[in-house]
Image 1 (cartoon, one colour):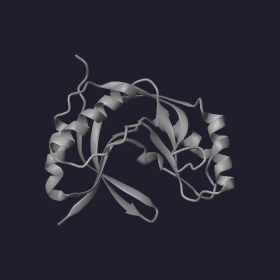
Image 2 (cartoon, rainbow, N blue to C red):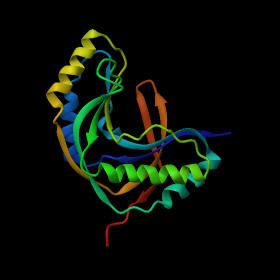
Image 3 (cartoon, helix red, strand yellow):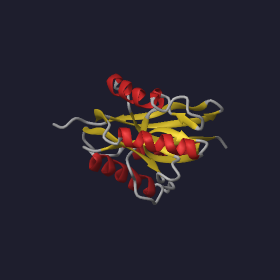
Length: 191
C-alpha cells in the first residue's frame, strides 16, 4: 500500500520576511551541529500526520476544505528553543499578533481530523516557525545558541497574511526534506 509522509501547514512566501529570516539564520551559519531550515521550506505546521495511506488523502482534503476561517494576519516575533535552553533541539521564531487565530485554525483542523479518525497530537499547540535544528549538542553549541537568544529575543520579522492552508508531502533525503504540495485551500477574505 502506498503511503505518504504528510503535514498540514501555512507557508511563508513573502520575500521581505524571508530576507529578514535569512539574515537571522546567518548568525548561526557555519556552526557545527546546527542545521538551518532552507528559506524555501519555512512554514507553520498545523498538523503533522506522518505516514498516511494514499487512500486517506481525499478524506484529508475534505477536512481542509471544510474549515471555516477568514483571512487573518500573524506577526512573526521573538526567538526561542524547544524543549529548553539547557537542551535546545529546535530554534524558532514565535507569533505575537494573530496567535489566537492561528491556534483556533489548528484546533478546527484537529477536530475535523479526529472526526475522520486521523491520529492527532494531544500536546498543546505552540505556533512557531522552525529556523534550525540542533543535530550535535555540546558546550560550544549550547553557548552560541544562548548568545543568539540573548541577541535576538526581541527580533521582529514582520506581519504576514494567513491566506492558504496546504497539505504537503515530505520526503526525507540526506540533504534535508523535499516538500511537494498535494492540496491547498484559499482562505476567504472578510466581507
